Length: 167
Image 1 (tube, rainbow, N blue to C red):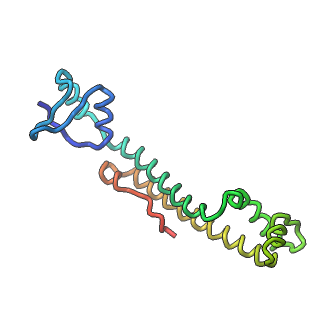
Image 2: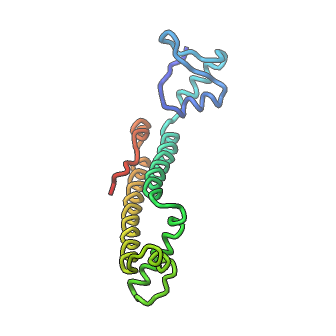
Image 3: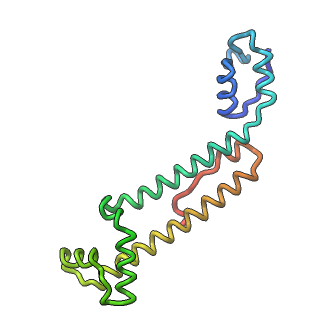
């Protein structure tokens, strides 16, 4: 009979990688194969869940940030997203020198019927808004990663998540 202490998903992966299955049955811990009971106990006793929890939490947070960013970015068609930097560069150039060459903005103006100043202003506003979101996401990720790195309780680490409304 073994003494089982729950230490998170990583413990089960460690046991499985050793070819050991552990489960509860009739309020007792069962091990398969039974011949590996001592090895199972050794793995359970030695297993430190914190490194695995840190790794999984960091991946989860990056995925959550990516998902949050995707929601913001997907408001625009891919062709426009591919040109964000070009649009911004042209808008900045126009604001510095209204006679600057701005072929992309000129095409937008031609097709939309709106003024070049308005289009440039909208592009700068969109870029600044995105930059604020990016800064907030970057700062929040760094704060969460720093918390993960110093936290020694795997359950506390497992509970950390990125919350999208940091702006």
